[in-house]
Image (cartoon, helix red, strand yellow):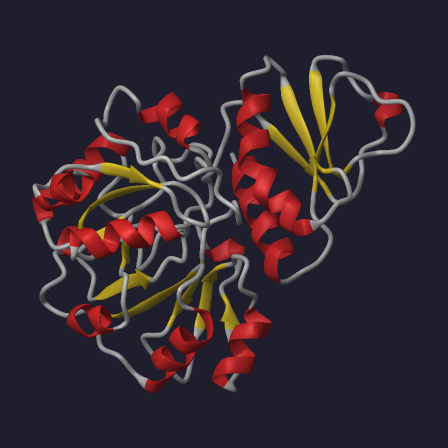
Length: 313
């Protein structure tokens, strides 16, 4: 039934391995316009197009040997590639630009829906624009339940942060636009060339973007976030502020002490990151003090990227 709804131009919230997405027929301008209205998303922020099989990419974009190398290594999976687009892709999907962002997800429920639909599906995160991304169907219902009719249940997202995005418009000069669970080092090993990492300082850009996830402020709870390079000293804590650690702290803990993963495992931190931000945002705290994840690549880079933008003002 949901496949026929998508073919008819309606919206369906879908599970992916990264976060829940709000899907529409990527080849229909009218259907994709409904995504922007439901999310309150500016049309300057493009959408990621999801495919079920590699043959579909030839219809949507210009494919190079570098694309095939990364697809063979990481698809299906949490990697998005920005490529020169073909005319079949509507301008609303690409913010009027000449490139399109494409991903082949690995979540079995979403892949089955893609197969049944027989279409590429545009699917940004299924939440109001700028707010914390959803990692469960319940999160989608909380935010968009009054705006959309269909939510496909697929369990909690098992990665928990959005996909790595790589700009491959110039195959010999790849650029990592947004960090995710696939690291720059892994991409370099496959391509055999350096990957430039887009500086977060350059993300406050004006006009249409070439890919989603480039805003200086994004993934943000309503409660102000303060980031800390290391664990906060709870002896000087305030009872009306929350303190969030990468791992469960030792010793006596107060009610305003929280943590992402009991052992500090970064996969666990990523998996619980957005759910924790959402829970604490509803708890009535004045501010959220959050410890950064240790490390500079892969999941550490992805987690800290989301936290920096959650804390931006």
